[in-house]
Length: 103
Image 1: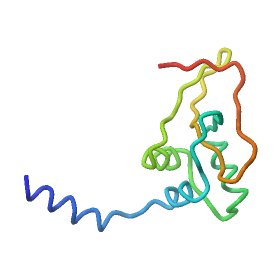
Image 2: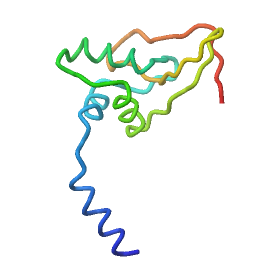
Image 3: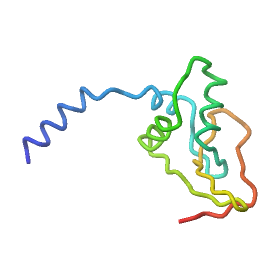
């Protein structure tokens, strides 16, 4: 058990930090009112940081790694996956009307 803990600590030094994690920490803040999809987040970050390139899967992994939980919402007959975040310093929040949470 001690050897496993030692190896885990040694591996932490060699783990590559995802660029997406750094961008999320720089530009996003939790907001229980705002509901942003992966695409919304990527588009807003690209407005602030035009050279930022990623894909939806990596962005989702990075959001999860940063502790953001994906909310599954039903809007009419559509199912939307969104995060309760907004862009730091932004006065506007993304809002989805007629939403119901799905567990």
